[in-house]
Length: 259
Image (cartoon, rainbow, N blue to C red; front, side, top):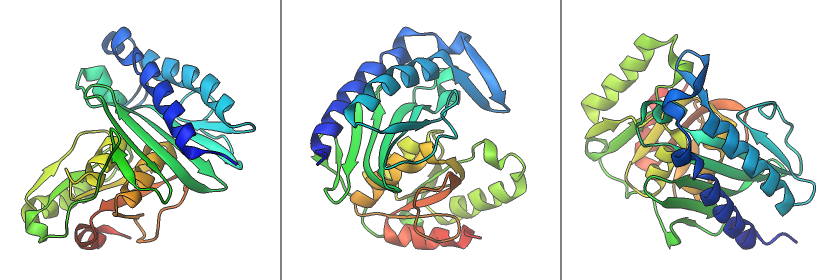
């Protein structure tokens, strides 16, 4: 039987070790364009390369689904690691220090372990299914329910929304006019963790991949939050889709944007 506490502890060690590439390499002068506002750097490749070799040793027969190289279409098996080696690559390229490593473990189509590491602040968010969520080993909870006018909402506006400018700004205008404020960091995994620990009251983004939100979705749930997709259904392991997550009242208010 797999001991997820041991797996998480070893994953933390490996992730923190791999994060040195964020500082040792030069992404601002060494990147490629995959598409408009879609970058990849040597940091992405090195983190993924190093972690793949080590993670597959932790669970026999496991495989890797990850953003880069030929791993983005990997099948989901009994045990599948889901890795975003750099969530927030655009930030990394611009020297905006809000990028993370995001790692989840799926067991038979269910996320059972999630880890998100922010190397700039040495903040390690984690969760094991049914065991709660933590930040640097201390338990975290989503914010308490409150009036929407008192909430702080994170909004994602990634490349998937480039063809829906008017719709995007209509959504942002509603949140801006009716909440206490909008934040837009540019790393969905990190922003989901901010919802999990109460820095945000909710986060919404409807243009994500599984590696963007797999870890964060478990962390938010285990912190007592709600996680739904843009159809109002519980998020599972969809390859692509959207996320609304946070405390119950804030998520209910943001349901106006489901379709």
